[in-house]
Length: 262
Image (cartoon, rainbow, N blue to C red; front, top):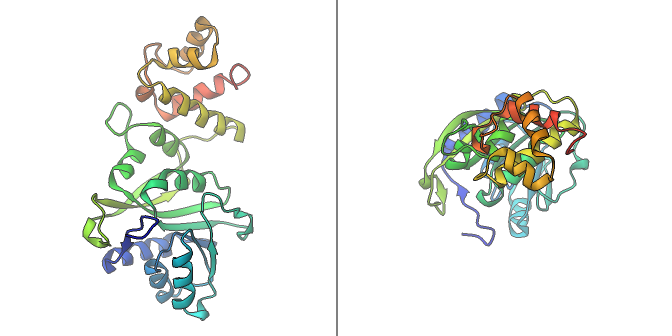
């Protein structure tokens, strides 16, 4: 294992499925996050995709890629942390992303992509449990803040499951590749509404042992009777806890709270 905890994908069948999903859904420019030794990169090049951007955190991997990838490919290789990279250098127009995501940063990377204005599609590999969280329904084991925010902003379709033996070194868990498209359940009125919604979801889930009402009272110090009426207008029971509330009702509540909390 490398110092950044990489698990390098070596299963050609899985690489081919990822590559096909990218090609079938690609529009505009392509960005690969964390290419490692270039397994997916090379597969894309072999299928005729070139002139795209690689963002890799590990300087040793950057050196490896520059030495081993063909010059004709016209690749832009950036040595930086995707979470800190200023993405303003990317071309205007739709952007497609692909990555064997690092498990530890997968949720943060996903959120940055989902909130990127020109996001068109992504083919991402996740730890399987995290993939399940993205599509989990209310009142189920995996339903949490990531589920709510993801489903509001995007939709996912499984491409394939991936066993530990598909990597070198193998991780201890199964993985899953998802195709992600910016076709969520919510049409937000404004950018302010979207970001208020995200803040609200994180706040209520931070106090998931309390009712949503008590969480809001504790954090925002607002009148309880007033909040009871606002919850009712959003169709939320006074007794509801974080995991019982659908993405749509969170969005409705965020809208009701504009000018009161937000």
